[in-house]
Length: 539
Image (cartoon, rainbow, N blue to C red; front, side, top):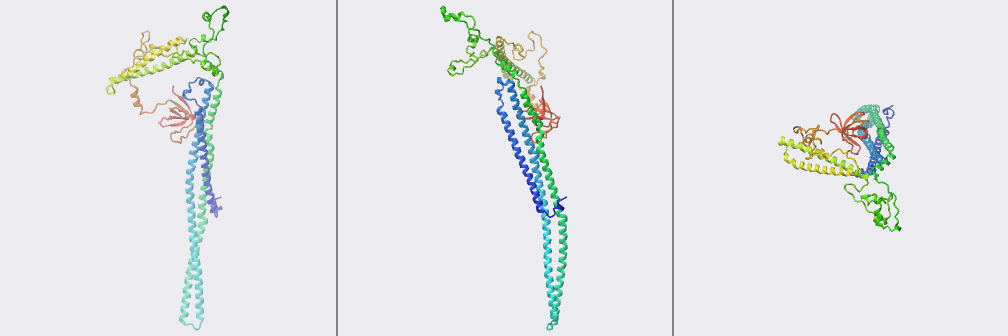
């Protein structure tokens, strides 16, 4: 069944129905836009919430951050940040696949419908014009026929009149004949106009309008079909990210199961264990025997209380419970922070000294690398004067050597303090004898034997600064690779599409916004959602 056959006389109904259909599409697009705004605001609030409760970089070194409960909370915040990224992806897909697509399709439908209605209006106007011509010829024929009958009756009356002359009779007959001829012409014209109108009317109701109505029916059915696809996309868009959202929720569950209360207790003990012995019993001082206070104190060889036990930390409050009463506050003396961490308990002091030694070793290695690089650069300048002046590097080489000597001194100093504190120095990666007087690595071992490493060939030395000039023109080296767990269309600007199972090179890690920069073998680069892939970084 089609509109052209069944609704041939319902032009107004069809016009109203098609208009209402287009308005429904506009209403649905507006609905999806508002849903998109809700998703974007929701994601924005989630990101702000995660950022608000996430620890700052300066706070990540706090002792509490080593506890599993704190780490799990940070994991939950990261998962919530990824979850917010999925809500943003939903909003983006809804906008791209429904709002923008349907809006463009709606404009095409409006133009097409307008053309069909204009075509129908022209056909209607043509039929009305033909009807006016028919009505005009009909009225003319009626008028001329009556005038012909009147002149014929007058001619007959004149012919019967005995007083009329022959000329009058002849004139009346000629007039009647002329009017009869004009009436006959009008009759023929009216018949032709009637035939023309009937033909056009038949074409209008059986061909032109049914064709236009059927076109409008096809347009409306295509609109309904497209709208139905939009309804399905509204659901499929969210279904697409449900597996990833599920992984975020699984990550939150895993964060809860990773909490280990026993391990947290051990961490707390490890962080705060002082290493002190518990204070011994105080001896009875018998003043009735005439022993004065000073001699009594000097005669006792065992510790009498916490102040003797603390040694150099006499200012430390040794009570188990802090006295919070304000009247006792002025009596407390805060310990003085010393470079050798002597203000700390023995166990904590050893840990801080070991940590400081590791920092010095890292800094020392950095200066040694810098010294080697400057030496190589100097050799290059000496062999290739056009590349630079070797004397221009002397100040940098001198400064680097001074830094190495300073760090070596600090290294010796902290190793001595660590030995005094009862720590072991064999865990250190660097020793003073590893560096020569010029601040570079010794090529001979302590016993005088030549090591396996020989000085680099100056002819092969290329300083990093020259490498950078050439590398600027090349692509950044990948830092790892990733495998896609899901398909990603990459429809927005700056993103790149990928298929499930595709392997891509990782160029830039996720900086906390939920996106990772990757590259294909053909050189195409772009961003993808971090939660869509499994990433393996190079070691």
